[in-house]
Amino acid sequence: MMSIETTLLRIGELQRAFRPPAPANTGPPGTFATALSQAQAAPPAGGGGGTLVGLAQAEVGQAESPPGSNDSARIAQYRSAVPGGPVGPWCAYFASWVARESGTPLGDRGQGFARVDDVWAWAQRSGRAVPSGTGAPQPGDLVIWDEHMGIVESVMPDGSIQTIEGNSSDQVSRRSHKAGPPIVGYVRVA
Image (tube, rainbow, N blue to C red; front, side, top):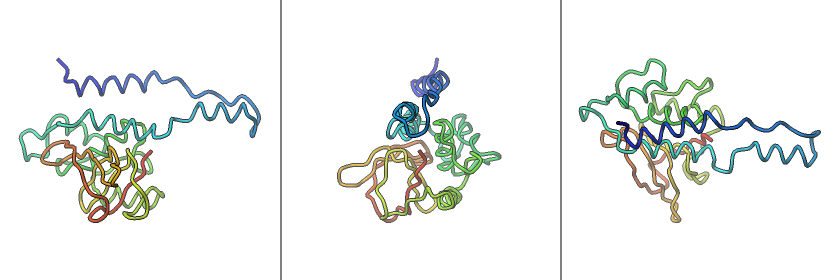
């Protein structure tokens, strides 16, 4: 019997597999027909972030087994998003796995990252880094702290953020945080 989380994940995989191809341009550049076909091909605003957030939401509650081991069958799947990822702290494995599954893999070659510092360095090199205090977070952004990270689920009216974090209390957990320090910044994935 499959858990609800596994069922939701499988539904997302099937939806991505059967997504229709983007329509081809129907006219010369600069025409209304071309603009319309490009608009139809573009994902809806927040679409990539929405997929990423939905996948993360389906994982809330996945826990280490035994507690404190940094391991379980599911966490091993998260590690699969990072070639050669050893058993160890897994917040970056989780973010890399969710990003890969949503179709927005992390890294220049989609290789994912085992370390938070490597995610932030890649974001800075690739123009995806939003240092704390320089821009507002968006759902689907990765939030970076010193040696920990999560996924922004939502932004509250006061600017605080709701997150989903791997390796938080030995599981995938939902948390709330105030904006600003100690947050280092955000990584714009989608």
